[in-house]
Amino acid sequence: MLLTPPLTAAADLPQALKSAGHGVIDAADVLRVLDTTAQSLAVWGPLWDDLPADTYLRDGGRYRRRRHSCFIVRGDTVEQVPHRSHWQPLEYNALHGGLERLFEPMDAAMVQQPLWTRLLRSLAGVCSAIKGEQPWYVEAHQFRIDTTDGIGRPTPEGAHRDGVDFVVVALVDRLGVKGGETRVFDADGPSGIRFTMIEPWTLLMLDDERVVHETTPIQPVAPDGHRDTLVLTFRRGGFQGPRSA
Image 1 (cartoon, one colour):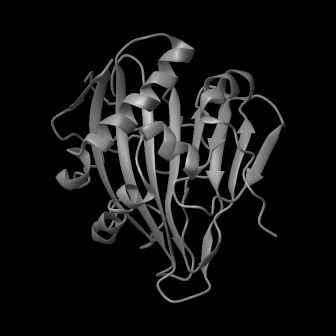
Image 2: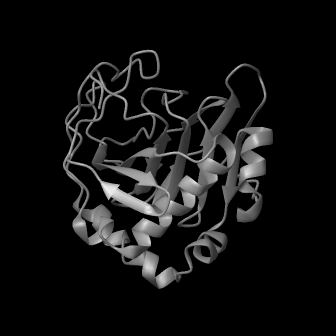
């Protein structure tokens, strides 16, 4: 049986992050916050059909496709920065840490839309409500996990933190798969929750300093099974990297 997410109203998301370290808002609330329609968000969906293969997987898998771009949010201003590598230290990613991974950038058809700017501004506002107004350094990842090899691993590194302040995971599509259960645990204790995101544009936000998270593998129940997500990380002070950026 699939466990449904414990939902939080969008207006209560900052308090949920302060008290529990995580919160989930449903698609209807996402639409209200962004002042948009399901049809407008659905326009982004086909962009996940054009993601290049992730050639950096160290487990030998072929199940992940992705794009990656970086932004700085300063108040109402969202600036896309020159394309750069994605990098994490080994302490946060034992599988791929310490490796500069340069992925293809996100499509301009998505990141140049006013809707994209509203999304980043809105989420940065939640971050600032908790940790104070400041520039937020955002890394955006489009992921498709497929079942080419019979199994796909959304988090091959296992339960982890990302070394940022906040992480956002939005489900974009889920087609012909089973599994893919999201698990969130206190970083310093045994408490945790698990659930499966089914409805497109359900959005999970995490305080990365307080919780670890993972998503269980997916398996096919129909041809071309896959799970698409948009992952955003928000960090104070600069982007992660082996050199200051």
